[in-house]
Image 1 (spheres, rainbow, N blue to C red):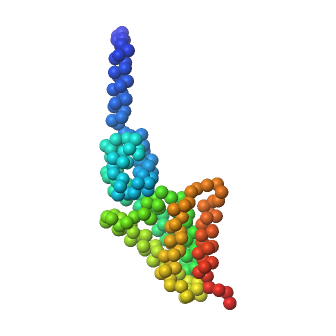
Image 2 (image 1 turned 30 degrees about the horizontal axis):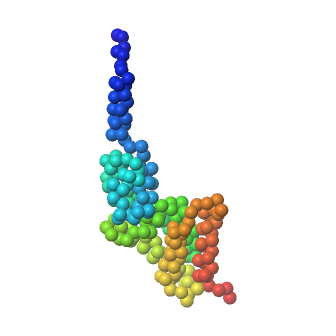
Image 3 (image 1 turned 120 degrees about the vertical axis):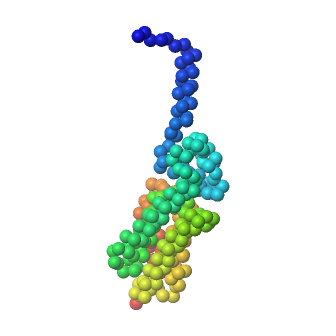
Length: 216
């Protein structure tokens, strides 16, 4: 059967229709890529101020295209918070499983927390900027608080073991320790000047030097 010739105008119409259909289809992001851009937008604008419209502009796609991957911006927040908290909780769990003295467990948790922060900086930054404005955020803050309480328990135990000075309140020391670790999100930028491991060693050394009991 002979081919039917088409005019230039018809070819142009078909190209336009193909492009329109392409735009209607699956957006040019996989789920991971979309979440990454959205988390960066939350950190830049603030979660509450970032609407789905803002996310669509940041992504360069329509709001409806976002729903190919997630049901709401709350789901994006939940995914991001769950990942950062799961990593921090993993650090605590692995340190506990070794059965080491409290001071050694404390050192491992501090070092591991710095490693998680530098490896997942956008997700942890989002976690640290929560204000507890929803049930989701309140649950995340509680999980974060439990990590700080575990650190306080370890400091208290290490004080009883004679490894850390006992003239410092353990709860206060734990808050100061995590405050130092968490402040990294405000200034840290990955560079070739120093490795993440070097930073973790530096933070751990400074914290424990100030807490260690003087040698007799």
